[in-house]
Image (cartoon, rainbow, N blue to C red; front, side, top):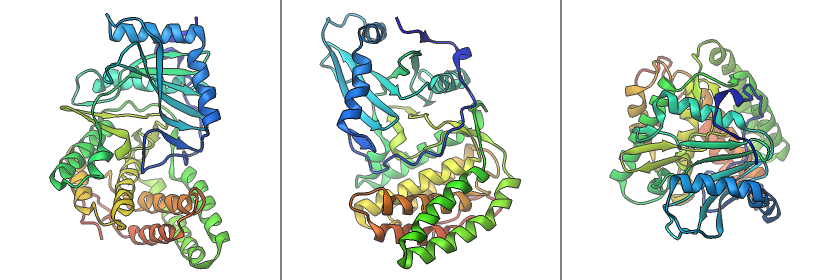
Length: 370
């Protein structure tokens, strides 16, 4: 039987990972990001191993006792080269009854332990601000098992047409992140702006090699980001970091707000998570209506709710992190899409250049986006 860890001492903390550049913010189910059907089949085969299957069924029935016996059902939710997430059930036709099994390429018991620590800090159960309940970590096959959260992705609300629901969702997303930064345990790898600069130079260099108008914009944005690094390095208080906080990774489950996908958890400047959410939300508008400005009001609501409960001065370096994330997305639009969308790359580079003057240094009150 694979070892099912439920203890924090199994954490292999401090793992240094390169920045995650493999997600898709637009989202669909399933999301195949840098993966192939063959890779998904290989991950699914791990869950179908007899001992793994037996342990998954035991965990499923501990959550849903009385379910009739039946075959294991697997539904791919999201697939990457290095991990794959499956909704898993046994003999149940009720879509609400299931567990989530995430198969990793290598040991990621650190994710399980980080989730345990968050639950202990008040983010579990029926808490208003929560994460999925971690159920077990199967060490040998590298499988994380967690609660399936019923509800709606914040992304779905923002892709809809009901403005008031979007403003409400934005406020709740801001409140979740503010509480996370205030109360989340400060564990894991410290991700500072110096590390981000390595990726920034790579993204800018690739865009410069592409030539044309993208090259000059990328070069200018790189120079401005390099100039801003000393200030960002010298004045931030590390907080628990989500690592990929965006509308796709927040579930509205009744009165609960649940942050999911903590694979990139770390310690970081809180402005990094803010920037991810803001840029992701802007890009939902770009995808749906061709403009980054569609969700500006929602972004204001998000920031106001965050400032009300989050750490002081958390917005101080938001301009730096937003500009860096715009460069990241510009690179993905040019090199991570088939076919590429260089027009979006140009839009994101312009947004990054404009972002560097966006937030006042004291960070006390969120401004209106340009």
